Amino acid sequence: MIEKIQLTLYDIFGYLLPGSITASALFIFYWALCIPTAVFAAYKLNPDGTGWTALIALSYVIGHIGQGIGNSFLRGAENAALGPKGSIPVEIREIALTRAATLMGVDRSGIDPVCLFRFADEYSLQKGAIGYRDIFVYREGFYRGCTVAFVMLGLALIVRTIYKGTAVAMPSYIYFIPRTQIFAGALLAGLAAMICRQRFYRFGAYRVTRAIFAFLALQESKKEVA
Image 1 (tube, rainbow, N blue to C red):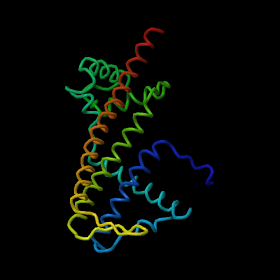
Image 2 (image 1 turned 60 degrees about the vertical axis):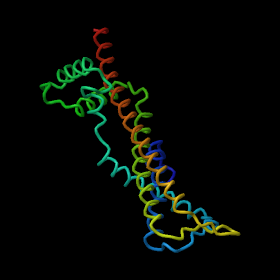
Image 3 (image 1 turned 180 degrees about the vertical axis):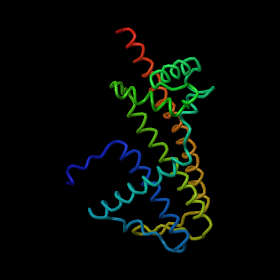
Image 4 (image 1 turned 30 degrees about the vertical axis):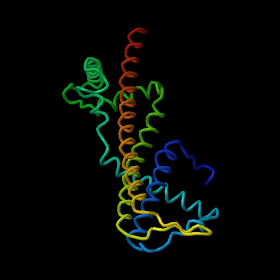
């Protein structure tokens, strides 16, 4: 049974990696709110195989939750790409809309950008014109998850700055982390979240553009064959 479990790139980049950052943020939240004066003994962190398995599984589950949060707050790639100022020219959008409406047998007014993208994407998949679709999907999921993860990390570090005495124990000494360094880390996390959000929309636009252009290219090739 276990050998039949297959991990995809999305499992790693979409769930596991962002989930590990979010898990770290949740630990900092717990540290700050529940045991603020405790010294974090970093040198004692040496999990065995079972421990690593538990950490990976926990990060994976948290990554799913993070993606769910991201789906609620990060959306609109289709509207952005197919809108008046989107990455797809209006003329091309109109052609794709007309052909999609003809194939589906519905009125153009009943097809919104999300519906147009989904039809074009499914049409190209059925015809085998995948191209770089999987790469765009993996990257989009990675950046969406990382956006949520870095926001959580930034908030956790800000909460940690409220309490004095943040310290990390090493084998031979204890390092007390100044509030300024923690706050700088929070600012870096916020900057990383902004960059990831921008990259999320960039790859979302790539994903939509690929689907529309593949749909139109397949339609043109069909005409040539006919």
